[in-house]
Amino acid sequence: MIYWLTRVLCWAAGRTPRRPRLWLGGALCELVYLLWASKRRITIANMAQVLGLPANDARVRWTARRSWRNYGRYVADFFYLPNASVASIAARLRDTASPPGWRAMLDRARAGGRALLVPTAHFGNWDVAGVMVGSHIPLHVIAETFADPRQNELIQRQRAALGMTVIPMERTPRRILRVLQAGGAVATPVDRPMPPGEGVPVQFFGRRCYVPGGIAQLALKTDAAIVPGFVYYDEAYSPAYYGYAAEPIFPHPTGDRAADVIALTQRIYDAIEAHVRAHPTQWYMFRAFWPAVEQASAPTRETVPTEAGDSFGGKDLVRADG
Image 1 (cartoon, rainbow, N blue to C red):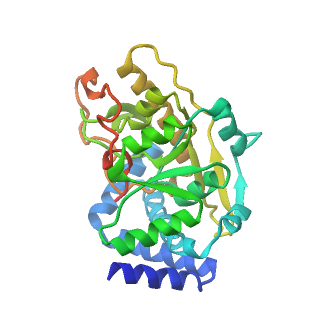
Image 2: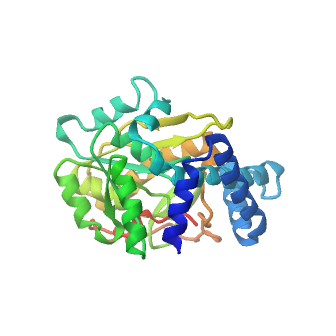
């Protein structure tokens, strides 16, 4: 049933003008926010941390509600993508990276045939971010496999048509390593909260949380460069997408692997924080991101896996929303 519903929604999205389509998707998700009390409380708590304001502040509640409306814009675009082409999406991209732009950032990171990791977040439109990067260089993206083989084939074929080679979650990390060792590029959302003691400790919006360290481990193992990248909307429902790539991050191992993983992961989250801070209503985080109670003691070195593959395989690396 989900397969046929997806087919119908993709067909309908292709025949609905953009502005009404995005408005309807936003309105429906905003309604879900209003009716789903537990998710509403979690979203408000996350946005309170982002804004540095009490949870009962009107600005926090507006931002939380608006993030669900923008998530609806993403969902509406997701169903429209099979009707789009790389050329049509690229024509609407506006480069917001500092001169010389996001293409130059990617080229600088890949100089000398170096492999590339592109971490992003559940922010704006991460599928279009994949199209953005894939329009410039061959790109592999990590994606969830759907239970229905027809659904899975449909979605993966759509992504392939937009220039992305899909790596199923279940086949990580070995396939990722092969791509990187051959000098390729891999992209994935990385903003997944983890329980204290299971992930890498980072400071994010002024508070410690725990996240997967897989991207940092991969970079250290393969000497891949890291370029955080994002695509976001404006508030006017215009046809434009706004693309951004941060300055490349290069791994410099010190011999202390645990410390290196923490340091690289922190730099990735610094880049995510800067972009979420600038556009908080476009971060779709509907799970509690920060621990409810901070641990009294400092994080131990055992919280950081010491070998690539210990904590970044499959779902631990990429599932972050909902």
